[in-house]
Image (cartoon, rainbow, N blue to C red; front, side):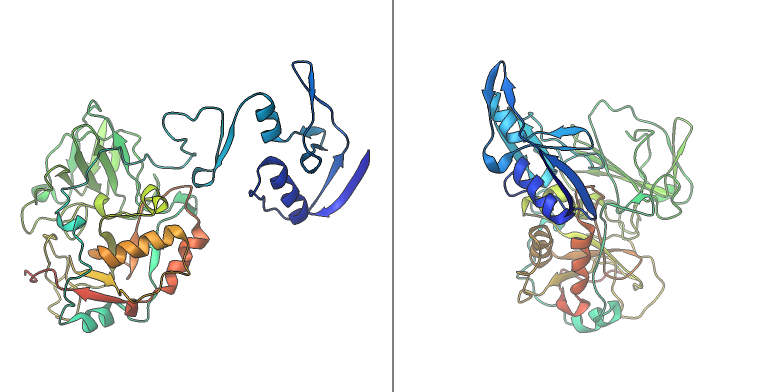
Amino acid sequence: MGKWGSWKAGTIGFLCGAVFFSGVTYAATGTITVDFRQIHYFFDGVSKQPSKDAQGFMYKNTIYVPLRFVSESLGKSVEWVNASSSVYIGKKPTQPARPPGAPPASPSGLQVFPKDHAWNTDISAYPVHANSKNFIASIGAGLGMHADFGTVWDGAPIGIPYTIVSGNQPKVKVTFTDYGDESDPGPYPIPLNAPVEGGPDSSGDRHVIVVDKDNQMLYELYNAHQSGQGWTASGGAKWDLKTGAQRPKYWTSADAAGLPIFPGLVRYDEASSGEINHALRFTVSKTQKGFIFPASHYASSSTDANLPPMGLRLRLRQDFNISGYSSTNQAILRALKKYGMIVADNGSSLYLSGAPDSRWNDDDLHNLGKIKGSDFEVVDTGKIEK
């Protein structure tokens, strides 16, 4: 028996990674003391031994056994999937494992609006708007973009959450307190425990989003609070995901621009797959009194023609080099080049919206802040309506 003590954690972390999975490392800090000894393994009475570079060890009276060696000795394959931090021993489940804190995946076959809908239109070849430079200047040419989504901050998930329900989800009463005359009447199929943006104690926009996957309907609330056996909200809207039918002009929605929120969210499953095939939602601090289709509402009294109207679409310049970014960030940036991002609400400028997910890497998302307002251009997607 040899006692190996006071090894640097990075070194022993590398050894642990080599023992359990080739190519997988474990990052740690500090030092640990482990007890390496010759361990004999028997499987149903048959002696089997791992290779010399994959021996087990003892740590705090627990034997750590090489997982791949044990599984394969039992006739089971082993696979590590980094995207979901999952270990598969033997057969994989029918549905991929979803770690705690991950929102539901968009159901297979769910089309969020027709492919020719404005949210899903390729605008990479659209002409630059004549007032592009002034719009960008008013938004903030030197301002960095901010990923307004991620894992958890200050005890609450970062971003706008959503819930997927089936067609038999019970519908509950929704009472509208501020914009009832511009809201689609209930009831809505919103679970009483549906997640609220910012957490249950949030004082922010408190959006609640529910997707009925069977009927392909989208339900969204603004300033939502669970109340008795239902909800109260300042306003709400329903969207038919099959047709993408436009709601009445000059009506607001759960968003100030009268737009749906869900179609413009950055969602981890899409970003990690390498492809986002729709435009994204973002906010700016000041807007003008006007909107561009598919927006239907404005939230300003300013007549400054250089302020962005609701529905204005920005496109990341085609010559912007994305090669230095991670694969998930590159997926976001490719979407910004192909589909752009749409002004949807008043808020912090260049804040890009997404859904919270425990699998995001917050430090990596922070790198999107290197992209400045000047790296975008405004595309001409139609007239400004007043």
